[in-house]
Structure formats: C-alpha cells, structure tokens
Image (cartoon, rainbow, N blue to C red; front, side, top):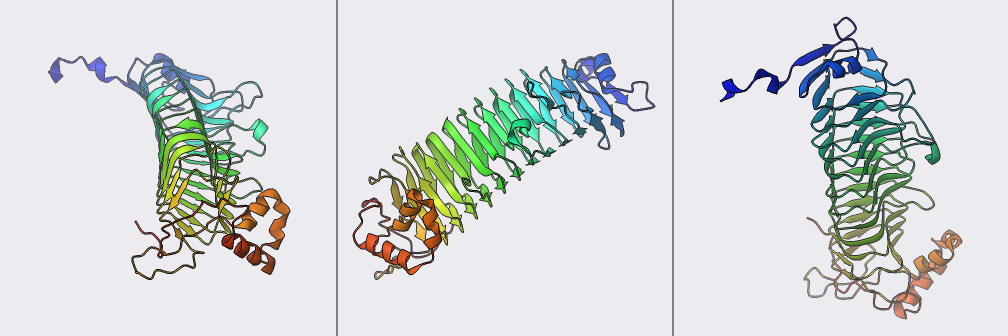
Length: 403
C-alpha cells in the first residue's frame, strides 16, 4: 500500500540560505506545495509580514534569526497543519492600534509553535480563534516597562484545546493570557518578572494548569469569571507589592486547587465571589497573608493544607462564615492532643482581630510586633466580637501534613 501512495503526499524539502537558490523565507513559502518542508539555514533574514496560508513545516537549522526590523507583525499563520520550529524572532513592530505579534495563528488547527526564541517583541505568540494545537518549549523575553505600550507573551483569544507547555516567559505585560478560551492545558511553564500577571484568565472554562512557576510578577496569577478550573502543583513565589498576591480568584465556581505552593507573597490567595472551590494539600509559607477571603464566597472547602509562619494565616471580611476550614496544619496552633490521635483537642481560630483591624486601617500594621497586638488577639479569642464566631478549624492537625 505504501508503494501505491504518490511521492507528493509526503511533501518536498526546500532549503533557504544566503547562497541557496531560494534566499528568503517568504519566497520559499510561495514556491512550496502543501505539506512541504522548508529548512532555513543559519543566518539573519530581514523579513516581516510572512504569511503562511498552506500546510507547511518550517524548520530553523542552527537557530536562524528572523528580524522584523520593527516594521509590524512577523509571521501570520492562516492554515491548518503548520509547524514553526527552531527560530530566533526579533524586533516586532509596536503600535497603539494593532496588536503586532512575533507569531500569530488565525483560525487554524493542528499547529505546532515550538523551540523558538522571541525577543524585542510587542506580543509574542498570539492565537486567535484557533484550536487543537501546541505551543511548546519557546523562550519569550520582552523588555516591557509600562503596561500601556507592552503586550503579552502568549495570548489565546477564542481558542480551544491547546497545549501550552515548557515555555519560559519574562518581562512582558502578562506572561500567559487567556480570554474566552476553553479546554486549555498549561503545564511546566516559567512565567517570571512580568509587569502585571504571570498567568491571566478571563471568561475561560474547563482549563487546567499544572507544574508551573509564577515568580516575581506584578501579581502572580488572576483567574476571573471562569469555572471548572483545575490548578495543581504550581508554585507562586515572591509576588510582592502593595496590592499583589500569588493568586487572585474572582467570580470563580466549581474549581479545585491542590498541591500548590504559595511562598513569600504579599497575599498567597485573594478570593472574592467564589463558590464551590476546594483547597486541598497546599502549602502557604512565609506570606504576608496566606488567604484573604472577601465578599460573596460560599461553600468553599479548605482541608489538609499547611499554614506555615505567615504573618496572618487568614483575613476574612464579614461576620458570617459560609466556608469550611478543617484538618489543616497551623504553625501558630498551641492546642494539645490528649488522646494522641494526631488531631488537636481544641479548635483553632485562624482569624486574628489584628488582621481584621489592618483590613480596615492598613496603617495599623506598624503595631504588628507590639504587646498591644497580643492582647487584642487574646481577647478576641476568648470572646469573638469582630471576627466570625463560627470560623473554626475543629480538627487542626498537630503535625505538618505530608503527601
């Protein structure tokens, strides 16, 4: 049967170099037949508005450079079955009216953007109404200074069933941005030093992000107006600032967080308007606030988490608790375990009066280490007035949870 397949089905190979018959990438694309392979030899190719409207595999050999010379978009894919592999792409044009990208994929399926290095960019990789593709092992390094004239590293808009894996993104506006994009898998990426968010969700459902690092961003991750989101084994670290956090959850429902690490953030998690979200087996260590729970948060469960040496483990607005906090380890717990079953015999009250006060008057934080604060928290523990009386961990763990 293989012998009966015409050779043209496998595609032909064209080489591009300064001394080859074909010297430009644009020229090679024009000459190529569908499903051909174009191999670009080492060198610098000063081209922009490279349009791909047929199935092609374009491979950079020896990391050739495509220099857009700041004239506009560099590569635009408008075909299924396109692979772009092994290039350094630099000098994307900047505009206040057009989102120029190093690589844009439009209304395409089965694409593969991999092993590329993107520098001096506006937007990096921009997926628009595309599906069933991969963005893998790319390095994206911007030089963003202000949000208003910078773009995102990897952006998905009205896209679905895309894998975003093994990428490194830094110094852009948002490292990875999703809007109206469902069934997206984001894993093993490093998103660091970005102006705004390491990862940003808006109106995107049934997505999963796992094993990612979000470090030293303006704010770590924002998941907003979405549902059925799974967040596992991620690290949120050193996201510091007056209004910064490791993870912002706003208007989120039916989602789950497990085995994540929140370390050295201004706030580990800031939650507002979330329902039916489970927080299980996460580490909160050395944060200003481990968790801030704001208005309209109902039927959420925090269990088997470790709260380790945070300035405040929990900040809570309102006097009525609609959420469950049980079987967590709290480093500040001073109870006892007479029956030695590993669970404290005295319930733990994680909300301190002083955390409530600093929520109302942030300047009060200067009193943090004073004797006055200890007396406040003791009096509130004995007779709760300002903090939710029913907010207790009835089964606090005596030892740090391990899993």
